Amino acid sequence: MVKKNDLCDRLLTFAVDVILYLRSVKNTVETMDIKRQLIKSSTSSGANYEESQGSPTRPDVKTKIGISLKEMRESNYFLQIFNRLQLGDMKKCEYLVKESSELKLILASIINKL
Image (cartoon, rainbow, N blue to C red):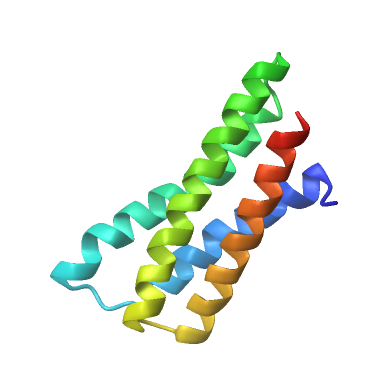
């Protein structure tokens, strides 16, 4: 089981790694919108999880972590698109697809336990 502080750090690291990876993806008509959406979803996942840690009620915690999971699912989807198109640093992209998959499972597990 991942500790709360470890998960906060892991989500922050994921968001930063996504931004750094996207610097390796060439800006084209096809990639610009997806890059923007991926930055929003990857950073939002961690931000919503952080916000959940200060929520006053259990239902509020569950709602915020639910949003975090939704954003991570979206991040995973966009990363899979970049992976299938073989854009940018492929080694980094493959790592991020795997990491986002693992983070989805962790977040879903937390929600199921609440």
